[in-house]
Length: 502
Ligand code: 4AD
Ligand code: MG
Image (cartoon, rainbow, N blue to C red; front, side, top):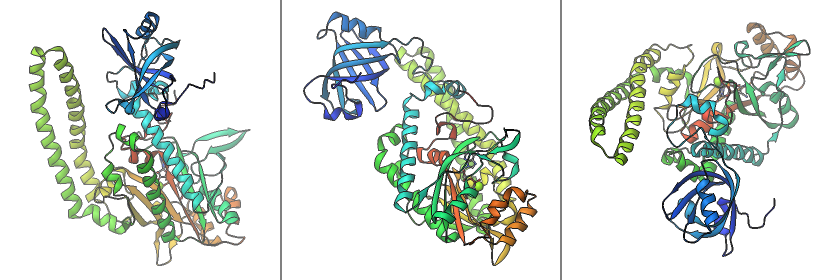
């Protein structure tokens, strides 16, 4: 298999004046009388390979002609630099070795519905946008490790099978552990706290599970979480760290994933604004913002914009439909595309217009003590160009382990970081309760089983110290950075309500 002439498409700049072999799949193919253009992808990029009838053998031409979308092949030829070409290089083909001809590949260049694509996720991963999103995900993962390692953190792993709930008992996946009840971990945090008492600063990076019955664009039932936990950190230090980490991640993506962001059509200028310091507001201030005139004005603007857009769509659609009958083939194709876009946009805008009154009601009726819903978070983030940190939540709506504000027992020293552009909560964290007596009280208040938390309570018995940590949801981070509307495209094989395959 090893062949010294094989080169990755991403390394075509290294090609000299000897033939090069690419190995991969046919992304796209089109032909004219004298030329066949094969776009080959090999996982590292795309390259246009040109077969000329005049310059190649008859059998090379006929092999090339038989290729179909997603056929696998090795293809050899001379690399030519061409700035107009995809990726800056093209291959002038001398020979083709077909590995397999693929027939009836289901994902064609025409558009498909998202349910169809999800059913074909195992193949959809090959598409350009999905390819780009997964590469950004990889870059984010790498940046997270770089960040924590340079900051002196130790990466440690928390178990997946657990005997206790970390984040409330309503979203637990129960499983049978040799006739004993076990749960899939909702968070590695409690174990992270034990590790931090051994190593000072640690982070876990693993899958977590929530039996979320809600079908939203932010919820998966299986997602990856990064959870740093630090001894001798208070809430302010915790927020500083979260801010530094997010800035570092964005910086690395901007540095290394430009091409991918371009494929995704991401507005880079928005990411470039993600610089320290991030706004920090209290929960109380967030409630004031939601119920105040600024949010009302924001909603008015959104409504006006949506109505105007709908108006213009309603004019353009019948115009195009009228033109369609008389149009030539090429133009017809264009019109069909545009109509599809317009209809999708009409549907989206109509939904937005139905949602705005609901959002308005939720925001304006908010009173101190209420939790924020998805729409409230969306509205909050729209007041800021950077991620915003909301801290000091009502203790009653937060987890049992959060320390209370020494100045106000109703307030927990918890923080959420909300991603801009409407993405919402990306990080949840807190300073932890470090007093044995108070923690015991909380466990009882929350109706949790003291026995299963015995080990966790012992952390407060043997050398307790103030400590803090947070959890970053990887998929929500990827969605925001890539500008993807739904978390289902941010993980190779998403698990959500109603989806267990492929
Ligand atoms: O806010 P959460 O529930 O916090 C915790 O689990 C803490 N124990 C973390 C800690 O302090 N160590 O979850 C943290 C983050 C959320 O902000 C969100 O980004 C993500 O995890 N998340 C989800 N992502 C996708 N689908 C879901 N169902 C998610 N639930 C939480
Ligand atoms: Mg949370």
